[in-house]
Structure formats: C-alpha cells, structure tokens
Image 1: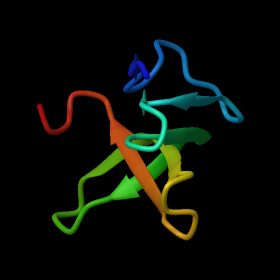
Image 2: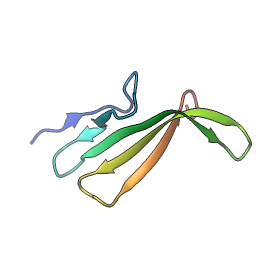
Image 3: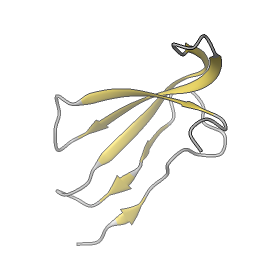
Image 4: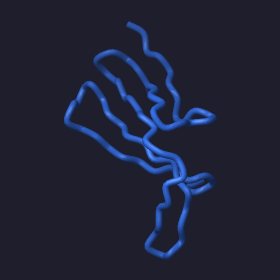
Length: 76
C-alpha cells in the first residue's frame, strides 16, 4: 500500500472544490471541501478577517465533521 500526498490549500480554492489533505487507505483519509470564500470571522479582540471556510471529513470516522477557517497571514 502506498501513501499519497495531498493539499493543505490549493492556490485558488473555489466553493465546491474537494480534495484530500492526505491519503493512506485505512490509515489517513482526510478529505476537505471548500464551502465558501470571503467569510468574515470576528475575533474576541474585535479584529475581523476575510477567511476561507472548509469542511474536513474522513471516511475512517464518518460522524466526524470539522469546519475550519483560514485567513491569509494569520497564525504564521
């Protein structure tokens, strides 16, 4: 069996794009769907960021679903 590299985030993600972050059958089958671009996320300190919203799932844990938000230059 062979592991395959995936994408963290493609260069130009669009809503509806689906890709694997990593794939090793039966071990790591993380899948990402791009839900939206330009989603505003407000932090507790009042700062706001335009983010990319994704949904992460894995066939290994079908009930696990995690929405994530990515903002350019935040968290470097």
